[in-house]
Image 1 (spheres, rainbow, N blue to C red):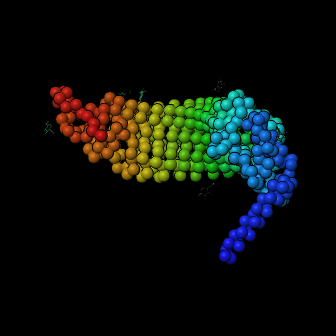
Image 2: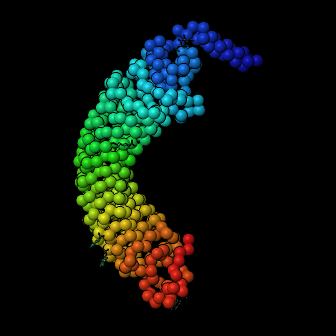
Length: 426
Ligand SMILES: *[C@@H]1O[C@H](CO)[C@@H](O)[C@H](O)[C@H]1NC(C)=O
Ligand SMILES: *[C@@H]1O[C@H](CO)[C@@H](O)[C@H](O)[C@H]1NC(C)=O
Ligand SMILES: *[C@@H]1O[C@H](CO)[C@@H](O)[C@H](O)[C@H]1NC(C)=O
Ligand SMILES: *[C@@H]1O[C@H](CO)[C@@H](O)[C@H](O)[C@H]1NC(C)=O
Ligand SMILES: *[C@@H]1O[C@H](CO)[C@@H](O)[C@H](O)[C@H]1NC(C)=O
Ligand SMILES: *[C@@H]1O[C@H](CO)[C@@H](O)[C@H](O)[C@H]1NC(C)=O
């Protein structure tokens, strides 16, 4: 009985609060100005039909808007987060002629602004007004907006509180503004999958708190800035699929916390820089599809004791495979295919304890491959040694055992061979 009374009185007071709020919206601690700015902002993206004051009279209270969150400052509600686009069930759709309302920049406590799949018809980001968000915004995201074209406004450089700038898979063009280098609090900078061109500004070397830098899948050119050696906090650096040329800077060796370096599919030349061996946290090193040239022997590969993935395929490498490559205790993937490597394939590679794929095809290795049958069986076609015309495997061509795919037997008797074509069993 007592419980019931308690429950009833709780209900009543809840109801009372609700009634008060409904009866007198002025109690809702959100300033009219802020409320209007929110409505206009969203209306700009969603379309004129959207009447915020009708649909969401108390947007920070009992009529929340999908994707919009508020915070209290000095007893008033302010908009802290706006997410536009299909992330939530009941999300805000963008209209075909979505636009930035200048009212957006009146939301002075806005911390997070994100647009996903919103801008489908061509629109550019105006360079105006961004400085007004400089004291608040921490995360700015434009993701999968094919209509978002034009340049990255250099006025993004005012947003010095930004910790995350994500401009992923839009149609952004032109050069990266030097001013991005002012964003010294950035932890994450993602520019991947746009149409950005020109050189990478050396000012990016000032982003000393950066953990992730991904500018892959653009048309960036020029050489890697030497200033990247200052990005000592970096964990991931992905510049793959661009048109970056020149040498690998020696300064890369200073990135001791880097776990992923992907420079695949660029135009980098000048050989593998010796200081690569100093990047001691590296787990994944991909430099495939570059005219790197030179050899593998200058690097003490065993220093990269965390390395799991090493892809140097199609990089014009010459010379031999050094012994140190066989000492990488965690290596799972080794891609050396489509180079001009020569010499013998050391059977010691078999003793890489974690190896799951070993691609050596399309080189000029000679002599006998001497791995065990156990190894060929374990690897199947993930041991690739075909297209090495002067290579053969030791073993009997008539054997019914596992043999390396696409490699001929060292036994030359043609009669044997034609009767018992070596084949792979997976
Ligand atoms: C929204 O609706 C209210 C009340 O129905 C009306 O007074 C107001 O003009 C409308 N606002 C817009 C922007 O259409
Ligand atoms: C990329 O930019 C170039 C000019 O730099 C332009 O010709 C091309 O159409 C753009 N491609 C896309 C997919 O936007
Ligand atoms: C590198 O990582 C270690 C361990 O996570 C951390 O203590 C150190 O501060 C990092 N170095 C830099 C320059 O961020
Ligand atoms: C491969 O390297 C040898 C020397 O080691 C050289 O004579 C030959 O031209 C190179 N082949 C290609 C295709 O680069
Ligand atoms: C492959 O190596 C042999 C010597 O080991 C050499 O005669 C031949 O020219 C090389 N082939 C290529 C394509 O480099
Ligand atoms: C393969 O041929 C050799 C003779 O060259 C013979 O000694 C051996 O027993 C044969 N192995 C099998 C599995 O038939």
